[in-house]
Image 1 (cartoon, rainbow, N blue to C red):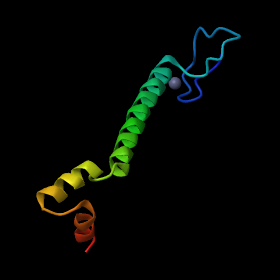
Image 2: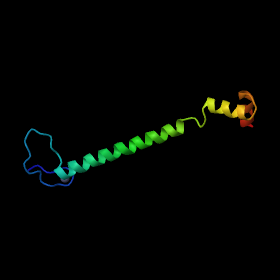
Image 3: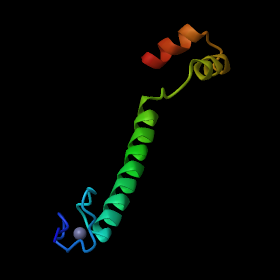
Image 4: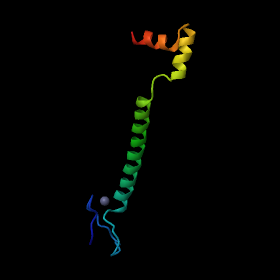
Length: 81
Ligand SMILES: [Zn+2]
């Protein structure tokens, strides 16, 4: 009798020629883990994108420069100080 590679439970009506290596419970668990890993990976990607994204766009800086009565170059120079 073939047994589950993970928990050792007997696989019961295992069909020869199929690649069944885990019991139904473990297969279900694996699927759930894979789904959770996918969700975690998506979350990581979103956080990375947030980090990579510039804090301000050039248009926003230009707008702030105008509001401060400065040219873009002056304003950026004043920010660097
Ligand atoms: Zn199992």
